[in-house]
Amino acid sequence: MARLHLPLIPSGEITPEPVYLNRRRFMQVGTAAVLAPLLPSAQAADPLAGLAPLSSRPGPFGANEPLTDIAAVTGYNNFYEFGTSKTDPAENAHTLRPHPWSVTVTGACAKPANYTLEDLLKGQALEDRVYRLRCVEGWSMVIPWVGFPLSSLLGRFQPTRNAKYVTFTTLYDPEQMPGQRRSVLPWPYVEGLRMDEAMHPLTIIAVGLYGRVLPNQNGAPLRLVVPWKYGFKSIKSIVRISFDETAPTTTWNRAAPKEYGFYANVNPAVDHPRWSQKRERRIGELFRRDTLPFNGYAEAVASLYQGLDLKRNF
Ligand code: MTE
Image (cartoon, rainbow, N blue to C red; front, side, top):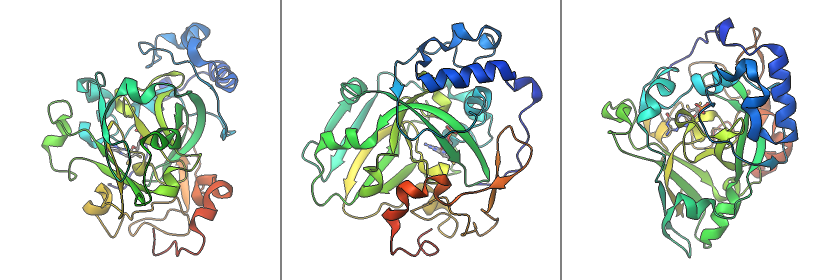
């Protein structure tokens, strides 16, 4: 990932404060289904306006911080399958067809099969989860996701004792994802978690944001969100889940092993070889702020890494 010098979001794209506060209050009560009608002045510019509302309930683990504006959440993205600049995904991801969709489940589990999106979502109670996202490039956002715990999905496949890791794979289809015609990364995009990380209650599968179905550029129809890890772990548009005995070689680790390790826990004490990870710029803010260990979720997750040398296991 190239070092990024973050342009501030143009002032015309910043949501006026009353609208913003309305939105914030709205997300807190967790009934985002009627977002647009409540926000008449933002309606025309709302990039989620055409997407179906999701009905969800407030979940645990809310980040008590102002939300990042929708325009940035949906317009300033990393999704190299649609180009390497931050505005490419919003411009190009319309070629992705997130429905019909299916996910192949394989490896060390009792119920390997090809599951349709409908199978996977059946009976899942959608929750609002406001999480910080800290990109390895040095910027961060606060995003109101709609999703469900990954554990409640993985449990259905009955992983066996040999399942020590979970590997996720993004769709490979250069017709739908034209960025895959260029070998900027080894395709398809692959990510993985240790089983205990995958089953942690903070780890979710997101199907929406800001109370609406996930826009293509954010990883429709299913994307992983692991808030204590750098953003690149949150793999988008997943088509394969595999239960494995050994850790997979992940895309960024394959592309640049000295720069991106398997764990990728947000850690201000371990610099990226080419830049510091001590501070970050929250999108929409002028001044940098300190990056927190585990992105501020240390209390919930630090115990997963007891005894592990986090400088070596970066
Ligand atoms: N998933 C896929 N398939 N391809 C990608 O290029 N980029 C990652 C991650 N998931 C990426 C991906 C990176 S580097 C980040 S920071 C986050 O997605 C960005 O998520 P967002 O665009 O929804 O903010």
